[in-house]
Structure formats: C-alpha cells, structure tokens
Length: 476
Image (tube, rainbow, N blue to C red; front, side, top):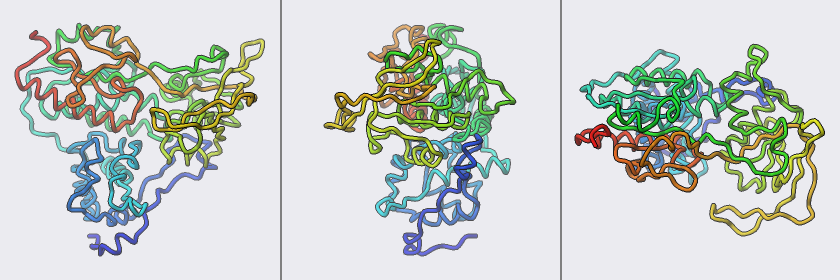
C-alpha cells in the first residue's frame, strides 16, 4: 500500500512527465507517441492530489467523473476500483484519457494550476483504463429492469456512443447506426493511429456492446432509411451524425490534383490503412513537400500524417501567429519536435499548377494582426504587396467542417440553423421535434471529443425523462 504523503511534500512535487517515443523514431512509424505511465509513475503522480474538500476539477469535467475519488484509489493501488469509479460516468476512459483537452477542462480548475503544475488527470485516467484492459478487468453489468421502449442513435462517434451506453445502463433497447463499415465515427476515421490506436476504440466499443447496445454499420440514415422512417419504429431518436462535410478556402487551384480536404486525407489513411503500406496499398499519393492549411488539431494530425507517409517536408500554413493557434499545445509541441515547418501569418491565395493539373506551389500573402475579432483572437490583416510563392506539391485543407445535410433532409420538423446544424435546447439537447434529440458536432461544428461526450450524457438523461413520462415518437 502506498504511503500517505504530507501536504507540503505533495505541493513540492513536480508533475510526472509522460514518457514518449523519440521524435527521430516516431516520424517513421504510426505507433502511439505517448507511452503511458508506469505503475510507479501513476502512483507518484496520484499522490500529488490534495484531495480538496471542494474539488473544482469535477466542475471542469463534461463526463462528470468523480476525479478525486478515482485518483485516491490509485494512491491506494486499487486500480480496479479506480476503473469502476470512472466507468460510473465515462464509458470511454481510454479514449478521453488520451484525446480530451484536460488542460482546458478539469486540470484548468485544479488548485495546483496556480503553481503551473496541475495533477495530470488525463494521464492517470489513461493509466487506469489501460491497466484494466491489459488485466482483463471489465465493468460490472448493471442490474437493470428491461424497458420496452426502443431508442435509435444515429452516429457512433463519442456523443452517440455515450448516449447509447447511458441509456443501455437504464435498461432501454438501443440500436446504434453507423454509416461507415467500422463504428467509432471521428474516433476511427479522423484521429490518427499515433494519437489514438484503433484497437483502443474497438475495445471500448465492445465494452459498450456488452451493455446491450446493438451496433449496426453500413447504414446511412437519410439514404438507407430516413429519420422519419426510423421514427415509426423507435420511441426516441438521438442524432449524433457529426459534421463531416469539408470546408475549402474557395481559392483558385483547389481543383488541382493532390489537393485534399483533411477529412478525405485522414479517412483514407485511417480506414484504408495507408499507414500500414506496403501491407495495404491505399490510393493516396503523398508529395515531397506537403502544405496543410490551418492550425487546429486536425491540421496537426494531417501534417504529421503526411510526414509519416513519406513527405520530405511538411508545412503548417496559418494566417495568425503562434499565440493564436487553436490546436492543443501538446499537439503543436509534438509537431514541432517532429520537424513540421510552421509558416505563421501566412495566407494562401492561390494554388499553382502545371499543364498536367498537378500542384507545383502556392501563392501566399504575409499577414499582420489587428484588433481582436468575435473569436477573441486578433484579426489577421493582409500586408499589401507581400505576395510570395511556397514550393509545394501537395495541399491539405484543414480549415474546418460543416454539416452534411443528408440526415437533416430526412427529418421532417427538425429545425436547423443557417450552417445546417440542428437547433437544440442546451439543457436537454431536444430538437424542435418532440422525441428527437441531437448532440456532438452536428449541433455546433467541429469541437472536442469530451464536449460530445457531455452532449451524449445530457441527451441520455433527457431521453430517459421523456420516455419515463410515457411519451413516444410513435404516439403523436
């Protein structure tokens, strides 16, 4: 049993760094970059927790995890109990422990953040989830009273998986529909292997299936069957189909060969296993000099993937400065370590091609920063006459996504806004049509995995209240 550490000693300890692959090695493989804590490192880090009487960290967790409780179980070396504690509210702990922006959520509210060394909550969550998987520890199946009502969940990303699992724990019959051939949504097609291994996602989906959730793949709601048709067979519906339509800059040259959207590029790499070449000969051509436009997490994923697939140089081209980069600091740091070249305060205005329609360069403008815009970041302003060319032979647009209208078109009476996202009541995720709820990227655009998890939890509670009151889509 680990010893109790005096409070003064806990506050003096530094945060335990995460062991990682050497950058010189990892740029040649798709293995996970962070290696995870050892048993000893996890206990040492957990001992730093002050076990506050009024823990603010819990307020910053959309998954509603009892953070001090699971950390205390690590201190006691009862890792199974720590895992069961997390599972009470978070059905995807190995995933959220890896990709949740803890620095902007729970860790931001840690009292030790004032000393710039908050408890590494996400790393500890990952350790516990990985330990449970490696030791074949499974969550106990809840003793529930089977309910007669059926719920359809559209989309198997983090919002859909969370809502489905929470409803299954309450005894409801849940069918989870996924358009692609593998469940997981953005977790499998959008996030690269080196950040989130596919085996981790598959494992946690199987754990959700153990709860009784039925996963149905290759089923495109809006094409295979409409939402209106599903409403004839289900008592409630949760729409969590994501925001999968790519944005482009609408500049000359975007129709040239070797110009990808980040969606297409990452989906091909992830689902068609381009990262396993030559075992899988995926139809994706990599240039020697690849430019990724944008600086969010998806842009970092794209630039780092291009490097691993064979690009000699991989650029990030961003119209603002380093300070305004929206990606997680950890991802930017990893990209810098790996040799990604950043062109800040740079705006592409034209993609240049040869007479065969191939990309040969990109014309850009230098920018300067003005006053803050509605996002709170300083607005980029072009510098007249600052045009220059960047020699590239591949371009990836990673400037965001929008709603694919296929689901919305098949949902009569479900209101969407000017961007095509479903309009919902924030407190319940209820749409304008009684019995239909929505959450995840399809209500706000590209956001974080953990915000989608939070939406799924809110919607599950609202659906439970809706169904337990005797209401149903099938009785209108």
